[in-house]
Length: 439
Image 1 (cartoon, one colour):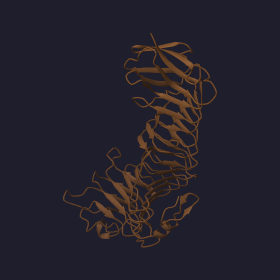
Image 2 (cartoon, rainbow, N blue to C red):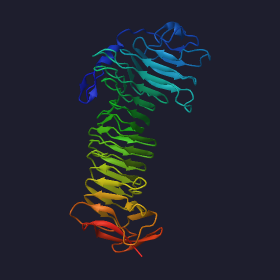
Image 3 (tube, rainbow, N blue to C red):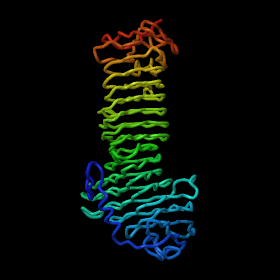
Image 4 (cartoon, helix red, strand yellow):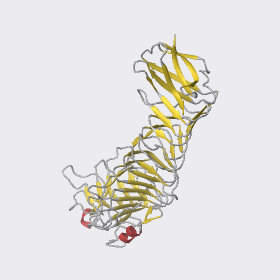
């Protein structure tokens, strides 16, 4: 990856320029609270703090409390690099703290603390783009075990060619825990960047990536747990990412050597991705809706006590190990699997036949095997005429389908709605599963 304004080394953004920023314009201060009547919105102005000292040291805590209803000083901006142990938000006021081009805000202690963590995420931190070609953008850096819990972080993209986007970096053992947004650049500018380096963790952050914005998971980071991934940007995974409990749709490209674990919640992948690791759907739901390439990269897909389906394309093998089905998105659709489809123990195929449109859900694979405990869950819309045939599983290779569904032997029948269907595992061109309406 190449990000203008930084040096790319082995797939990660070098932090040397950020470290350099920390040595410039540093004003040592102490812990303080943002004034209820600040002179202006400049973090680095002592007159804006009580006591009048700028929080700017590795053990300092900056506290933001309530403001008078007439105050417009909730918009705060850095005029020089700042390092603090912690920011405490003891209020429902919607503060926004911006790191303009050339400044950075680094956390060394707890990170973000909200007095009432149950409240809605109202506070935001914003990293602004660079203002000159080769210049540094605004940067947010979480180090040690600091975390960005309960807020929204926005990394804005550059506004002209050669201008780098704002960057948020989690390094050491720091964590996300926030809503993280990387916006795309405009007019040829680079996108915002979110990156997890070293042993950083996600702490169920909800990630949104747009345009040429980037999410980077470094190969040395821990297994990063995110709440969801949304948008149409680019994600570079060089380690395993666990998406858990959220709901997101991502139509961008996922690349890298890492893999995905889809836990509780629902994730839709709609782009043509190239990542090489395995996709493990475990207890959650993964839908694929891409029209080109492979939604799950080149690796295999394992479904364990989970749901996998859609009307997209995957390149690898797909195994349903106690899977809850291969549901196609309503009304009907085609799921294409580049290699082998295996219905494992208690795997299920959900299928809709539409008698009104003469169409049905279809699963296409290079070869198909079915465990004796696997079942077909059939539903019908309308009434199909006698003699109509639906192909629901198509094996494009030369091998016959191995095995049959427990509730539908070869030559057997299954009744749903107003129709009874006769099963033929040698249908189509000789190795497809077809259902024909019989009296």
